Amino acid sequence: MSGILDRLEAKRTQVVVLREWLEARPKKERDEWLEAFRRADLYSSSSILALLEEEGLSGVNENTVVRFRRKLEGYVSAR
Image (tube, rainbow, N blue to C red; front, top):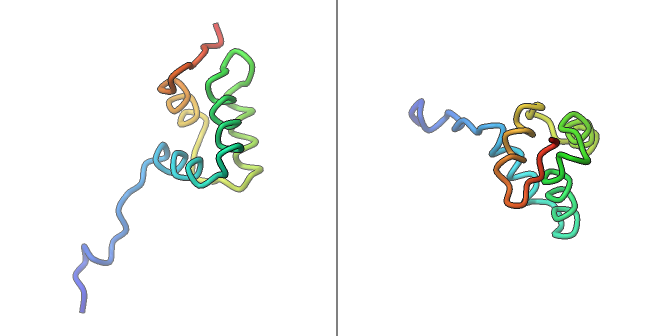
């Protein structure tokens, strides 16, 4: 019989879920996603989230998109 801790799944933050999903994309597609994340001046977080959901990613929200994109090198703010 295994212990309780062995049976529990470790918590994954929404940012980790998003990062892992992006890393699983083919390079060309991942590069396009990252460019969209970097360009807050062109693409809103809500539109990125809608497309992520359309592509089958669940478990993230708009706040996650905002936090993730602001940490990317080359991020261009909407202002």
